Length: 142
Image 1: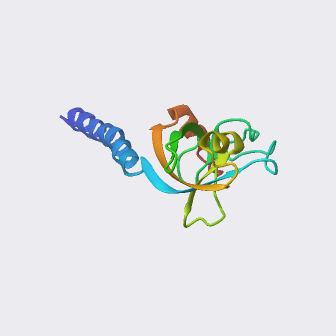
Image 2 (image 1 turned 135 degrees about the vertical axis):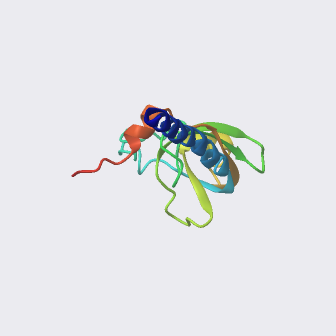
Image 3 (image 1 turned 30 degrees about the vertical axis):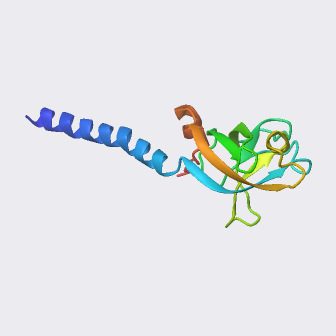
């Protein structure tokens, strides 16, 4: 009897862990706001996930999405789209309106390189792999 209660309890905890992330993801799967881009000054420097930033790769910085998340960014005026991977944190300038900082290559594909800013929709296409989420979590030192 006791073993059955423990098993049912563990099953409940497991189900809560499986269902909760789906609900959490659905609340943050789409955002609309301003996009900007960053390039030469940051080129070669370390990003938040530890890799070197390349302004020629299709990557972006976002304040809250997990590192490694794949998103589709759509320029609302032109309808152009680009798929980027979140590998950095930001934007830090005008953070009330700007929702994403794109690499120069991504901005070029959207037609945002010259104006520097543009209204976009950001839609989560794929969450990062579980191993990526675990690696991105800060470690606690006892």
